[in-house]
Length: 401
Image (cartoon, rainbow, N blue to C red; front, side, top):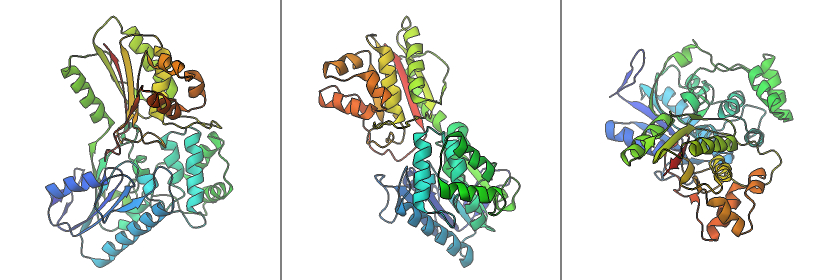
């Protein structure tokens, strides 16, 4: 038996379980430890994450044909359960990465259209909320539409949040939650980032004109049947890091701040605050959240955590007794195999010794090349964990020692 935490708890005797995201396998394992008698289950995870052999793989962060097949399989699974009458409700185990892993383009659009739009918005530095505002109006399983497919069966969702402020509408593009945005809002996002994509613009314009049905809104019966429990978030990671540092002898030097906005600017700001704390030893500063990188036409390779760390290294150049680390809790920072990077006041000096220009690398958004070159020269800075099987955004730490 399972009871959801919500206004009106719902108990299931024979639920169908859907696990989607980077933490899907771990969440399902935990579910099985606490519950018996699961009748039906389907799981979707990204490549590289340890999962059962029967799990379906989708692409991340840019969707592809695997993501389309995964979405079709989930859609068919839901339909089968609703029609069969064998289950009395759905349990959704949802974690970060679900937006890309399940991609079901609306009629008239292709996965290439969705992928190109996603890439353009990511390169423009669009926050995840803006990206998902567009996605929800281009696909069949996002923005509450999955809940519509599950109707009339009730839904209990357990959530591991990787979105700022735990916005349910943004987590996994809100598959079972009401959508407060409209087709017109999605068009505004493309306009604000100067994204031009004819098929997508035409589709959104038609939707804004009433030619496509809107996503379910607050009060819609299909989303009112959903109950949810938030089981983990970035705050948990930040607080745990703070407790560990405190128990290791560090004084927590500043209230936690939310990582948001430009990654390089966050790195500069964190380092400046750390420098101002030099008289207080040992001190730790812990921030959490999600930054963005506006790549533009730059041809570099990196991730937002490595960019933050590189910007921090430039500010810390020559400063002793300060270190800054920034990392993705899922173990994957952008299109690299590193989770992030750790820098000190020695990083830039070491870089110049091997012919690297830190400022030029930052300008090109080429942090990964910068750090891998340092690594090959015997100065490792990259943090390598491999996929962790979870995802609660990023953590950045400054140590004054």
